[in-house]
Amino acid sequence: MVKPFEPKELLLRINVILRRQPTVVAPLVQKSLNLGAVHYDIERAELWQGDKPIRLTLTEAQLMRILAQSPGQAVSREALVGSLSNNHEGQERTVDVQINRLRRKIEQDPREPRYLQTVRGAGYLLKYD
Image (cartoon, rainbow, N blue to C red):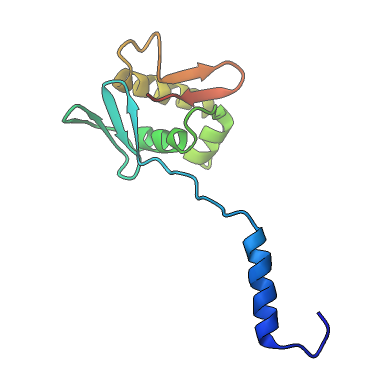
């Protein structure tokens, strides 16, 4: 555009450029996950089995929040340890124990997990219905 120019012409050109751009649709953000008979409310960080609440410890609630942010994708132990504490030394085993406790609350058979799975070499994965 050559100077001097009219502000109206500038606005028209901007509108033409904006019309060429594809509209961006915001990704759908899930507010809850169904894990079989268990329902997890992401916004409230609450776990329910039917109409009965399942009590989560602070660490379990943090783990569920982290895993629910990327359902269907493996989250590494290191990422979980980093999100849970500042002291990373020897904490990977603690994450394993907390995952095991979560499985007992979520899974029908914690030894054969369907929803909270271990991905060998990658970390943990939260699947939902």
